[in-house]
Length: 176
Image (tube, rainbow, N blue to C red; front, side, top):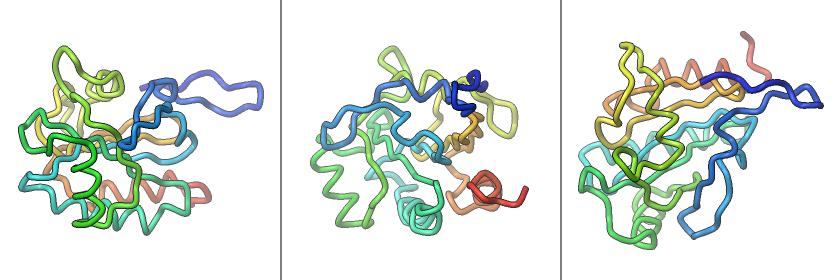
């Protein structure tokens, strides 16, 4: 992902920021609502062997949330491991994992009805140089404030050094 030209104020705008998203409560907005932050986009599922990663996602949200970071959860049932309704997903995430980060309405992360955000994100290669379809639940895309995207496969836990180091380096006031 590239960086858009500077605005009149000299700030960069991420090309992804205009993409519409719908929060799990039905409120419509754009990915740009979290513009300027370090954003960790994750396709989540409530009944997956990787679901305990919710705990680490919430840990990151608590650790860095007040410093310009947010996790954004995108539930998906494309791997047949998510509840049917957004209400059930929201209840499960809140009561079981104490999720406080923004959760979106259920989306398709692959295929003909792929959400536009995932159309863009899946074009980004991972550390092995592989782009393309989301392989499983809990694939992670770290979107930096300048629009750069880093991709991490599902088995890379949210608190892995390669993710945490990238977050810490990209946060406002970080020593680069």
